[in-house]
Image (cartoon, rainbow, N blue to C red; front, side, top):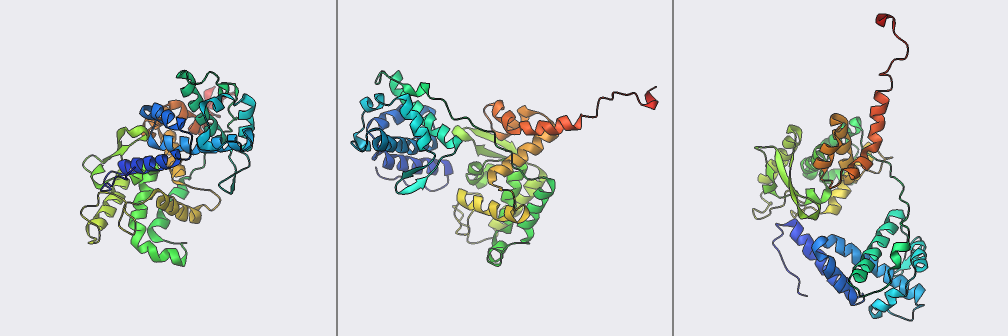
Length: 357
């Protein structure tokens, strides 16, 4: 398939095209029936989801060829009849196998969440062909999903929030090498961190922002959520000031192309990448809180925590963060209710005070 070129103004279109190219490449390694499966789920899944499906299925089929069929079959030669031969025990062995396996000459391992995701992918494929009447046996329903332990919410506290913004602005604590670049990027980096901490935006949403996404008259901006839906988010004056400072710097930089739509640019004056944003967050966070592994998602959690503490309204938090299911929000921020419980612990008096008598 010939690759489609775009002008780079639509980050999500570009990302989808790249994902589709990767899917087409991996499909060449998989059994022919996988193409039918992907076509069947196309209208209810994103390209990124389908890309993760083919990654997961490639590992599953590699396992079947190695362990189930003892190398008597190759992955492209697998058939739907072979899928019917897979027992629930085989699937349990597959989950165990994922703890320590070799793929493309690399030793890999999956944690409980990665195992659960791969099992979910395999189940989805089996369910599709079973519902279509193309296989008569679906043993995936007999296999329990690995138990997922709740992750501790890692976030920045109040003084750490101020500190990371200060480091981004003044560069104190950076290595000599990093300091050399800091003068060029400090206004951009401060705007990025302020936007994360002041709105709870996802990293993909931030990277996908264009200049025209920002509306200073309403202190708002448009983001493309998971699934492709657009939403309007609002920001504070503090966030607005950081964004305005960065836009002013861009307007005064003759190296910024008038045809470049991306809001946040790299040092090469192209749309900044997800990896670059992850690295800059890590760089500043390591100075402020070396014992915490702070990522862009943790900055999102920091905002969600602060918003919940201020409002006490889980539905507002879910809406602003773009969670489709409020239970997702409640699960992530349940620990914050401990603060509320602690704060009211002394509200009820058991012995009347002298003033009450």
